[in-house]
Amino acid sequence: MKNTEKIILEITEFHSNIEKWFQGKTDSQEALYETLVSGFSPEFSMINGNGDTVTLQMLSDWLPTVFGKFPERRIQLENIVVENSDHHGLATYVETQVTGANSNKRQSSAVFVVTKEKALWLHLVEVWM
Image (cartoon, rainbow, N blue to C red):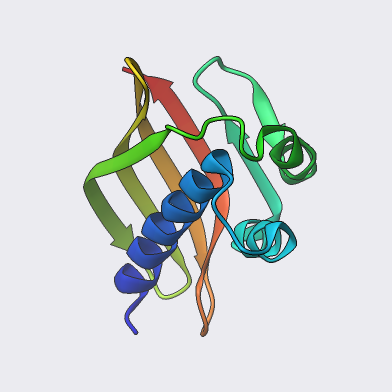
């Protein structure tokens, strides 16, 4: 699989899985949790739409607090664009989260470390739209 395909696959699978997490739709909460966090480099960090820095540990601690909290939430991705080298990639995309009548949209930019097996999230910046 080419690096661009690995990055797009990671983005789409992560968002599909986080939607399931928010909805509480899984046969195994533990297995889904492990799937979610296994896609990140140990050095992962992000700057969320509010300008706050979030580490992998902070994200890992937050996930259990939102399991099943948003049973109606849907996540849509659009405009995924990827540039990559042999070992890294930069992706931009638009993410929209819809929960009932409420929605929020963000422009995301993500840096990935690409291994032989997969792409790992290294850094993510979200900007509210």
